[in-house]
Length: 160
Image (cartoon, rainbow, N blue to C red; front, side, top):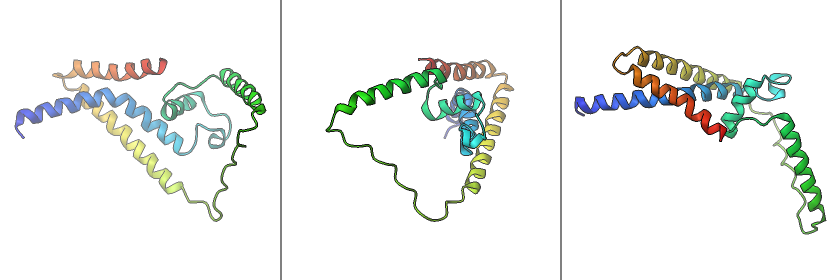
């Protein structure tokens, strides 16, 4: 490759990295938290903090979490709809969830530790990359612009 091509590739890498850095940080942190199911009551030990639930909802469902009142209302409407369908005799009964296979449950902790270390490494690498990019005077303005766009665009998309 020519030096000019390598310079272009480095610049594209810089701008793509700066644009996706906010999402990488969000998904790395929320993925690590979800590894231990901290977004659920059983993982946290009680009701989990709102910020963890928010991050998990964005990570898993690509949307903002619903408010509890809205969830309860939606659940009531679903129940009303189910009762209205009770008159339909052709509908098959709901299937029960399959029983877990007998035996010892798999030991998850080693993989959970690995995923957490992976997330920490990804977060640190991203923060180091942002630091390096912002310390380069020649590309600082464009880097800041790409970083700002990387924050703003996903937030706008979540609000749609």
